[in-house]
Length: 218
Image 1 (cartoon, rainbow, N blue to C red):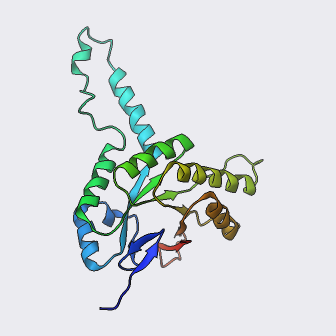
Image 2 (image 1 turned 135 degrees about the vertical axis):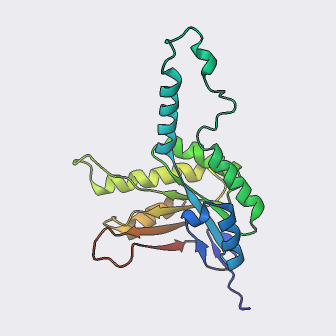
Image 3 (image 1 turned 120 degrees about the vertical axis):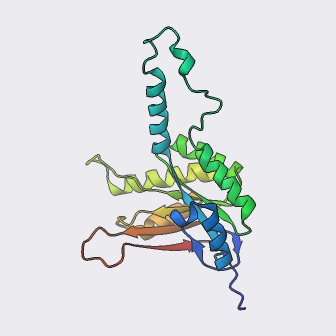
């Protein structure tokens, strides 16, 4: 067998093939199949901060609904100690993947706020993630905001996450950047160890729905 070992984000891989975030990396059974097939690392599906915020809001709505309809309404409220809220399920699956696999397991986070990114990133590191992939996808809505300001905002966010962790961080870039090389340089300066680009076409004439490529700096 040829030696296909390489390094990505400073991690030692047995092969240069990395299973990206997808439904295939969501189930533990699929992760084992991917490892047996020769992947060098796996990227878990993304944890979305806005999804967690929505779940929290919905929970509050259900808890408060009907609270005054009966004097004993509190008796049918769910037991909060047993309620699986937020990223607990994701972190549990991440920890299980780490115990199951020998290849590096990379967590994936799609955040909105700096505070949210850092909080969830730290919990992923504590759960055993070997690295973290950040999904940076910001839709500017202020017409007075220039592209340079958007790029600096993303770099500042990445730097805040990198400084809060010990594991390496990669960044998944949007395909709609006007100067991707410049953005990549800013991210490298911010401390990111690599970057990925995921493109998806909505054109009806497109024959390929998506493609993914990665570039490690170290």
